[in-house]
Image (cartoon, rainbow, N blue to C red; front, side, top):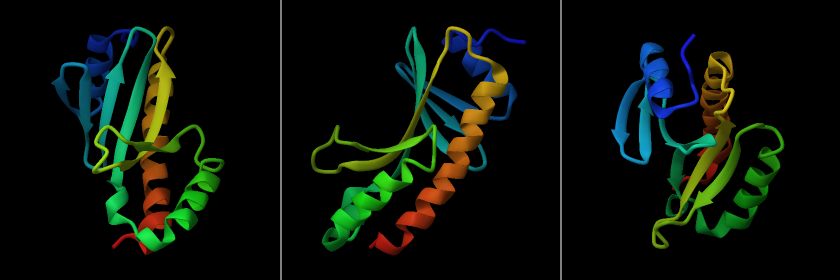
Length: 133
C-alpha cells in the first residue's frame, strides 16, 4: 500500500491505476480513457475539478432554470458538487468539484471518489444537454 499523503505518493498510485499524469506545478492533470481531471494537492487535501462547459455555451434565456436544476442536482451527486469557476470573467466555466483530506487517505477512498466523479459527469451532461447551444 503506497502512502497517499504526498503528491509523489498520489501521482505514483494513480499512474499505476492507468491514469496519465501531467504535472503542471501546482496542478496535476489526470487523464484516463473516460475523464480529464484537474487536481490540486495542498498539505491538507487534494481538490478535483472537471470542466464541464463554458457558461457562454448555455442558453442565456434559461440560465435561471439551469442554475436551479444544478443546485437541486447538488443534493443528488454527493460528495461532488457543481460550481462556477470565474477565474476568467469573460469565460466563466461550469465545473464539477470534489476534495479529499490527504492525512490518512486510503487507496479505495481515492478510487471511489474518482469513480463517483466519472458517474457524476454523466449525470451532469444528461442534465445540461438540452441547454447547450
